[in-house]
Length: 96
Image 1 (cartoon, one colour):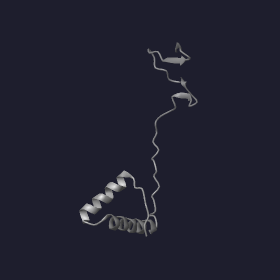
Image 2 (cartoon, helix red, strand yellow):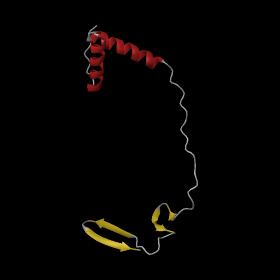
Image 3 (cartoon, rainbow, N blue to C red):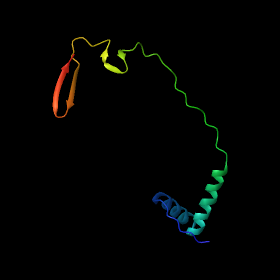
Image 4 (cartoon, rainbow, N blue to C red):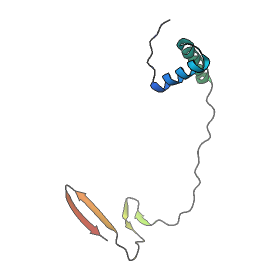
């Protein structure tokens, strides 16, 4: 049976390496790769262990709301919080 297939560059390189290492032709390399791949695909998937993250205390929330992080409870003393807003070419600076 003749079939034309287009291989991605990385797959073609892998097949060329198999051909060179085993000293076999393209047809044999493609057939062997397809057989091995089909066997692997037919195997049931191994059960996955769910990934869990451990919670850790990080202290109290430093902003009033996550929707408005600029309205923070604990503003650093002695420093200014600047927010530069750029809209339609106009630049204005607001300092809290």
